Image (cartoon, rainbow, N blue to C red; front, side, top):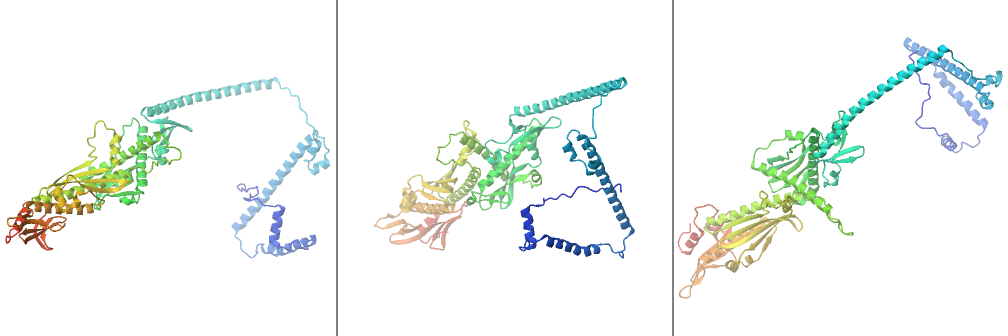
Length: 622
């Protein structure tokens, strides 16, 4: 029974019962219906109470334990102990109540000397009937201690004072030592803070202490407030940067991959080298680099959503720039664990190209930070005019413009080279020169700033090709690429460099400037120019003229087509048609018979040799 523990406090209800009159009336009305208060008297209520008592009696009898029911001895012992415990608890409670009441009566009798009416209210009925009020009094007794007691008191007081002084001395000594340790920790902490500041980091004051600012002021609002790390003091006084510790082991890196036909030809990740003077600065640099990498990918994703029409797509937390049908650039954000597990690409020419793109993305973000700073430093726009939007930044646009222009320049160069090789294999004069603007960043002018160099890539890229066709006739092909208004891609402009007087006679449209928006249309136009120039070369070699006797002899164009006839007198001796296909130049008659084919290989008979055979009747052509 000594180990039995029961709570004497009433069970607390989570909801207080509402016993107000409106609540009671509502519950009675809901339980008994609208007829509850009709013909309601005291006698009817008493009869209802008596009836309920009679109904509950059989249930109480049924609740009695059945004598026939077999109860084990262990259960009987537990019940007996429970009953003994209940009786003991009730006895203790009764004793406590009795003692409390006796103490209250004793104090109340004493207080009746001073406040009879108030003190009598707390007396029990039994005491009031047996003991008169104001019969118990209280007085102070003048007590004079003896000399022995006084000496004991002096010894005790001196002992307590000595103990208190010793305790105070110990506390002061411990406090001094603690202050000394705290001073050393503070000295170490602020020394490291000053060391960080001397290294060029910005220290700002924040609520509850100081912080280091390792972010970028010109970053987007999503990252502007993330680059601040509160500086806390460690147990040994060293600096702990709370925000930096959150990035530990979670650093992200921007990965750029160059895919050709689905195979990885190059993979680049920006490797940061730090010259940190301490472990804390090294962690701050890592956090700054992580923030910079995350901001790059965030800005790229935001800009990529606006460039879906330029073959830039986002899927599975990655960005894909489709350069052409089988070439693509894939950009994603990976952790350091994925860096170690990723496939190491072989040393291929595409690796240098991929690393250049990775460096360009970082440089372009820094350039856009400078643009944001310039706009913030400029005078505000007048009231009423819309403010220019700073976002999305021009990172992917500049890179995609360069990639598309570079790819289309290569396609144009290859096609022009094929045309000139076809002409040279036929013994005709043809060559070309190519120049690109901006030419290169390898050897910039010495007085050029880095911002002006990068700014060149926000202007339209231009490639100029000077093409010399047989005749000779010179044309300039200008290709401009830009993914901002008014251009949204590449445009090709073909301009005659000099007046092709001979070519105008058979192709009048060659004098005008022609503009094309697709490379396929340009190819068709260049093939037509080559056909007309080759035909004009044939006409120039043996033009139609009058011989003695008033007869005509020589080559003459049929209408405005790419065909010519060789007239001798009044007879047509030969007919030739110049056809330029994708990979060769043909001289044909009709639809099937081919007199000459030149596909760029050396050692073939020249076109003029074939034409001379056509001019001689009966002489075999091939």
